[in-house]
Length: 86
Image (cartoon, rainbow, N blue to C red; front, side, top):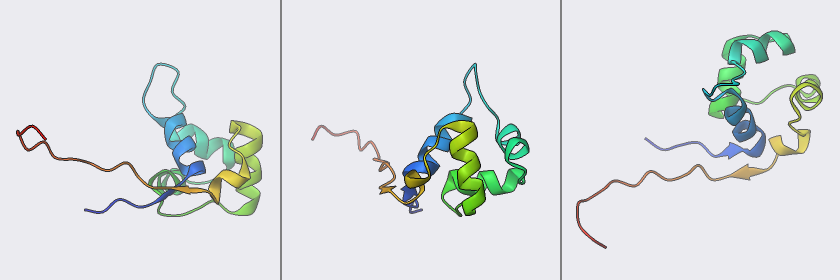
């Protein structure tokens, strides 16, 4: 399965909602922004992007700059272990 190219904003949002002791959940992000949890999930996966007014709120509420949603990075590749030394 190929991975999508994610914007820097999507990567920062993914880091924000990744499980950890001080986690902010996708549900909390959705509630704060007035959107659905499915919308936040889509953004984190790179399956969609927020509307402009939501980008403003993401920057204000969570410190994710609007420009980060237009800067793309390749998803990290997944390498299989072959059991042989290279």
